[in-house]
Length: 476
Image (cartoon, rainbow, N blue to C red; front, side, top):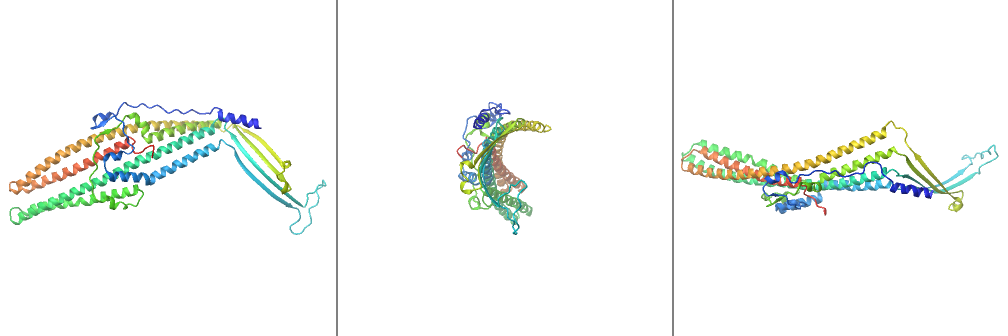
């Protein structure tokens, strides 16, 4: 039996494993991002994107992202799934080893009737049991399924790949979280900036309305001019509650992202602050770096490895199975002599089985597992192409919004010059008040468009850093 166990152990540990041996597919990467050549400041230089938000130079944003990465509930959930997946590796590896259990029995037989009846008569053979019989036993039994064809080892391989996928899901959660925090923060600062501009417009319109009202009392202009200015003032004031709502909503979102009540950050974030500035340079690296940097691509690749291993698990069911069973026990009628060597016995059993007919179930299961691997391979390739598209789209949006920002800045300068001229001509009585209102409206619109373009540019940077896979580090 010892020789048989040793031989079978060598077969299990050194034998071949059914199913395909996984090899990571090779994906073709373009030499550079096509839109990078048209993007101002973009270079192919590699950059450390693990804490990309620090490039925006906003200490408040830095603090928010750092706290969110430490406290966010989604990241903690992903970390818990990783710990769970690692325990599944232990479960899978346990199948390589025997299962052993211990048992003990203490029994007494009393042949006397419980209500005082006579002892049972002797058997016809002349043999009779004693009135009282004590039996004691103590034993250990073990079962071991020998992994001759590697089905268990393929299961371990699959579990390890799933744990690695869970590891990258934690990284993906960190990437998504840093982007969510940054975007909510940009929404807050943009709403505050637009609110400040609206307050300035209200003050300017109010001053001009005072002038118009005085000229109306003097009979220089009609009451129509006063009403027109009052309408402009009311329209601008009506926009303020919506901007306040946007700012409050962003504060609430940031509070929840930091695993705190929605209003927990009121005191910290309510004071207005300018939008972060754009970084001087924009290193985007090479497309091939996405294969290592994008966590979602790594998740898809590890899921493919796990699916490949599952083919081997299913294929092993085609082959015979061998179980070894062993029992060692002490048995005695006398507890004091239970552990005596003369009361020791052993039993060894080798149990082989091989499914001869299952109506095609096993082979159909193998084919199903192969199709799952095909789907995982397609998902991996799609994740790669989607990652390339994300970067190209982010570069395109950044370029377009920077161009819009430049044009709105020029438009604002022209509108301000026109408004100044219209105001001077109105005060001199050379132009009707409607010209002043139109010029004011152009300035208000240009100011707001410029602020929104600035916010869009920063938002595009956040999307670009996210598309590049920034937001995690091996040390975290």
